Length: 272
Picture 1 (cartoon, rainbow, N blue to C red):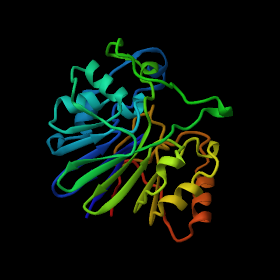
Picture 2: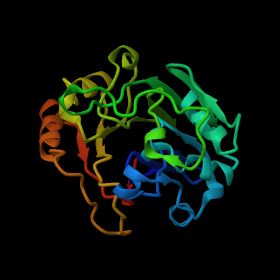
Picture 3: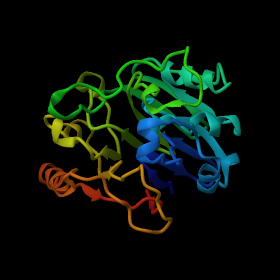
Picture 4: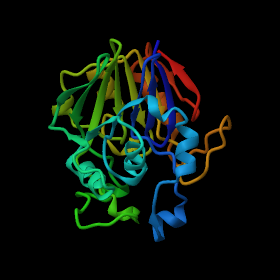
C-alpha cells in the first residue's frame, strides 16, 4: 500500500513502510503581504511540525522553482540525507542555500532511480498562463547573484517538469501547474493523475487531453488551497477564489466517466 497525502499548494507526500518521497514540499505558507513586499524564508517550526519524521525522507522532487514549490527545499535537504531532483534553477537555489552539488539536475524526460523501489521520470511540461494570456508568471531562472532570503519575485519558474513517480509498481503523475507539453507527455501513462486546479480553463483541452493521453484510473484535484493562509490540521481547506472547481469536476467526469475523481483536504491521507 502507498499512502499519499496532499500537504498544501502542490505538495505531495508519498509514504510506504520503508520511506517517504516528497514532491514540491511547501509548509511555510507565507502570507500575501510578505509575499508581495518582503524577503521570505522557510518557517522552521512549520516544517518541523509537518515533517516530524524528517529522517525517513528519501528524496525530494521539484517540478518548478516558484516559491510555493521550492522555498522550503533547501531547509529540508540541509537536515536530511535525501536525494534532491529538479532543474538548473533548483541547483542555483540550493547553492544559494549553501548546498551546491546536492541537486540532480535533470534533462527532459530523463528517468532517475530514487531508491530500490522508486524512480521518477521528469517529463518536460509548461506552467499555467496568467489571465488574458499574458504569459507565465515569474518566467526565467533564479539568478546565481541572488542572496537568501530573497523576495518571492526572485523565485523564478525555471524549467517546468511534470514528475512521473513510479513507486512499488504504481505510477503517479504530478501536474503541478495547469498546463502541459503534449510532445513530451506522449507515450507516458499513469495510474493516478494529480491535476492542478487554478487556471485550468486557460489551457485548451485541459483536462480532457491529459486524461486521454495518460489513461489514469484515478484523478486527484489539488493545489486549490489559498496557500497564503494558515491551515488548521484536520480543518477544511481554504480554497482560492474564482477557481471554478465544479466546472473542472464536471469536465473531468464528462470526458472520463469511469475515472475515480477525488478532491482531497489538506492532510487527509489517500491509500493506493
